Amino acid sequence: MERWSATWRERALPELATRDWDLLVIGGGICGAGILREAARRGWSCLLLEQRDFAWGTSSRSSKMVHGGLRYVAKGQIGLTRDSVRERQRLLGEAPGLVEPLSFVMPHYRGGFPGPKVFGGLLSLYDALAGKRNHLFYPLQQLRYLAPGIREEGLLGGTRFFDAVTDDARLVQRVLGEARAEGGEALNGMRVIELLREAGQVVGVLAEDVETGDQYRLRSRAVAQATGAWADRLRQPGNGRIRPLRGSHLLLPSWRLPVAHAFSFMHESDGRPVFVFPWEGATVIGTTDLDHADELDREAAISAEEVDYLLVACAQQFPTAEVTRGDVLSTWAGVRPVVGDGSVGLKPSDEKREHALWVEPGSVTLAGGKLTTFRLLALEVLRTCSGFVGKPVDDQGGAVFRDCPPVVMAHLSLAQQRRLAGRHGRQLGEVLRLIDEVGSDCVAGTDTLWAELAWAAEGELVLHLDDLLLRRTRLGLLLAEGGRAELPRIRAVCQPRLGWSDARWQQEETDYLALWQRCYSLP
Image (tube, rainbow, N blue to C red; front, side, top):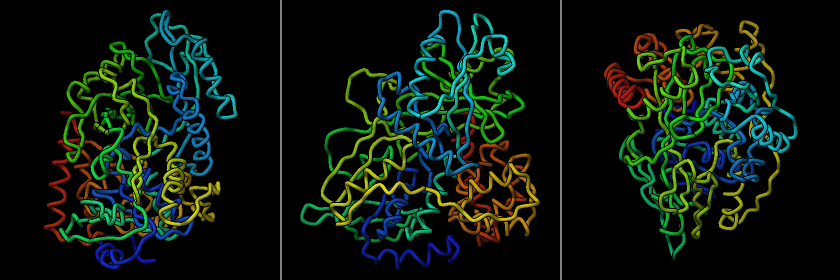
């Protein structure tokens, strides 16, 4: 198979635009990738179009958690929680190294909510939905060993339970890889301008290649819109609206606030749950939840007020760490596509996280939804599209990620082998080939191999430098100043594989560093 690269895209796009598709998917986040994967599995001719880059929106800027949604139990959303914990268990089993168990600790303080008994009751229901007991209360003396450095004034103990964590952008890449292996196609840099309608029915889309400005009219039997916060853009006006809510995060070097577990606690200013958790060898503090009033086509960024809010949370729970703005490596902000219920004065955190499907002849729009349940959402969308396409959809129960044949990786640690297999799946052999070529060294103390960067440049449809450093890898988050000090070596490894001229590389580097400063640094 030809490398999935910008060269392939340039050659393939005109031909792909002439095909008659069963399904066009708009949106290259986790939900769009999931729809493409399930359609391809069933033999539908299907193409995904993403306006920026795969996972560019919410799906690279989430809280990285694959969880059952414990807060949804408390709100009585039992069905959503049941589906979520079962899908969490499925992903843990199918994608080790990409979706990994994460231990959570909820400290309990005298007079605080929730107390150990109430929280234990919620977790008992949570565990029952998952089919296994997964929590334990630790009194103060034992908790000190699990949680050194947390605030002890009034501390009664803590409850430990388990959910899961992932690299959200890599999860999207793996799902797209599964879809492409079974006949689906996906293109980034393709902005859908409008839906094409004939006799009151959607029959395709008018799309623009953002790289060239060329426009294409693509025809299909059905269109599935999975555009997240942009869901109101193309559909006909109807019931329900998206309420864009911003969630922002701080990332610290792990040495500055070393944690072995995720800590969940209530912010003292507003009673919202916040987290401090380990991710990719660093420590994350998150998240906020507030209305996002900025233009959606501008990349979301954390505000000064959100930085202060998260630093207060950190000081509340880890007072002796004395974390300040100067300790922050990077930030990220994502926009949650929450379906608002229209209630006046309803706080962002009180909005339910249920999804909705909005249908017109020939088109289905998915609004809302959770990363964890992307497979179930995809099946629901396909069932709704099946009448337009004329093909039935059943839940075959098949794995999202197919088992890959074992390969010899004797020169790598067991942890590296697990990580690479989880992140690259069917393309693992290509990464191993490049390890032989560029070596098995990691980039600047991260877990990312130089060979992974090389493979992304060769075969993961990178159009711009931020695609490479913020989504195919997470080096732009994990390295100081977005990896500025490593850019000369990154250039040596990746520029020949990307086929960029010196002038093109210099422009990409300038644009990337400006973007990082604007949207991934401190305001």
